[in-house]
Length: 278
View 1 (cartoon, rainbow, N blue to C red):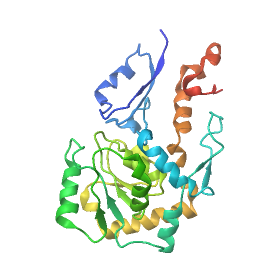
View 2 (tube, rainbow, N blue to C red):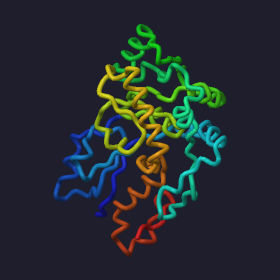
View 3 (cartoon, rainbow, N blue to C red):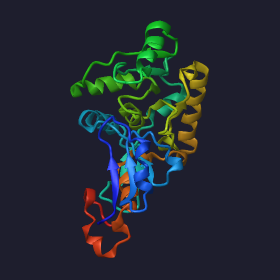
């Protein structure tokens, strides 16, 4: 029986650590496990890798492309050197970063809260919404209600409004990960997420990871905002924007595949239209 790479996701359910023993069994057929929303410490398990949920492409993709079309010169090179049917470059806007550093059009309110509070089973979103939007009304945060569903036709208007604020609060959604985290990165926004087993997924990305809501304070966040904006401009190689690209994850997954090591199967490597890695 062939060995295989296991990929789990496309849902909010966590990838439970209790299933790790299937990797460790002597007769295990699983070469490597890639999973979304994993409650697994990947730094302690060499055969498990977190993968992002990314954006909801059916809803967000065209709106994000609309922003990218406005900045055709803000480009980054391809994510891999393996020519995995990917474009030669990508657009990665940095207009918000420039505004932060020049203090151009910067509002007093820097943190956006724009999520549905009832989609998180732990109650964190509800508490944040109550504490910040209803009870606190702090001088540096702004709250916009998010209706159920997405009207794709008004996304450009929503993005124009939301991109006034350089930090977006992105607590967990139905699962540990959240589309808003990845949506913000595509739009040159810095997401604020909570410490979790997904920390290694966020390594080398312009993301603020906090331990609890006490860190949602103006001085700390303004300092982090400026620090990250400076790194984006002065040390751009610090951040692995390739993690936002399908080709990056596809390349990593294929390199774990049995096809990489088996010459006789070299022509069978057709997964995701990928070309064989030698």
